[in-house]
Amino acid sequence: MAALSDTISLAIDKALKAPNGRHAEILVHDGPLRQTVIALKKGVQLAEHNSPPAASIQVIRGVLQVTGQETVVIQEGNVEALTHDRHSVEALENTVFLLTTVTSIPGKNSHTGQIPVVDPEA
Image 1 (cartoon, rainbow, N blue to C red):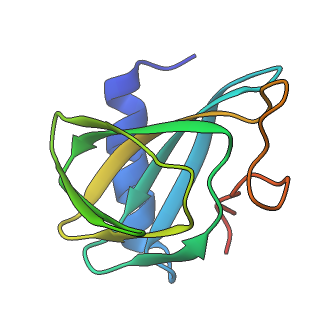
Image 2 (image 1 turned 180 degrees about the vertical axis):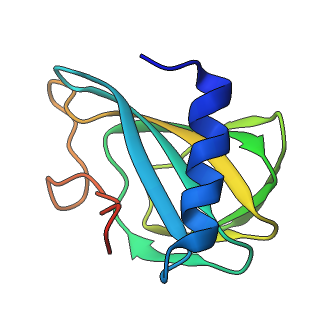
């Protein structure tokens, strides 16, 4: 596995070159645990989607806005737990973040029973 710093640099480079302005790479996929590095070019939005049973976002580089029932701006270096509400995401700068999700918790499901998936090719 490559160093996280290398993964971050490659992710933002790929997002800046991608027609859709984004790139995602799953780092950890262990049972219900997922950790994904996601890079978004400034201004790119991820449309409103459901939250998994548990999730957090740590902004590694840039600034991210998460809009659900409330709007939260997450600055570089900060981490924020996601609520169980539908939300959208927008990069206010060229941004790389670590999305950590738990896709199943006994007795707790997302609104649709599905997790949001970021297709690296979409």
